[in-house]
Length: 121
Image 1 (cartoon, rainbow, N blue to C red):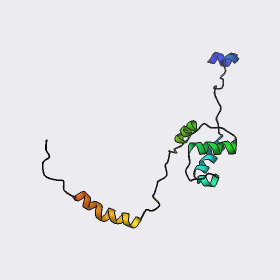
Image 2: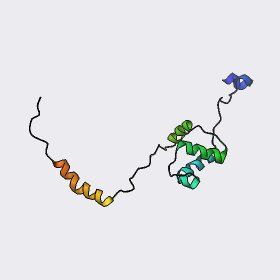
Image 3: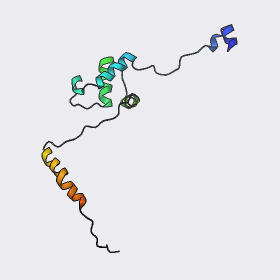
Image 4: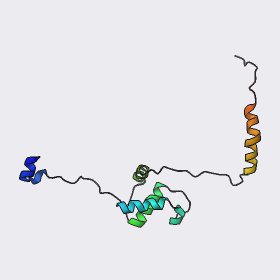
């Protein structure tokens, strides 16, 4: 190594690593994270569910950079974002009835004794 520094052999100088360069600059990376803190409907999507495909579409529209959704899933996971599913609720859900059932009926059902008769073998 010392000889290289003395003689300045150009064949031994460091070369950049091959491969595709980084997709997003640190500023773009931070901007994408701020988008994820907002609702997708604010960015023109029909529902409030972020998907890797939607994030890839938004990055392509705003920056002109194409991400494959599979790569983007890994990218999001590395930054602490996990896949989410919306909680599905029935429109006819009646909270008062459910609360009453959980408070009164459920404990009664759980406290029922099992039959003491032996089962046939």
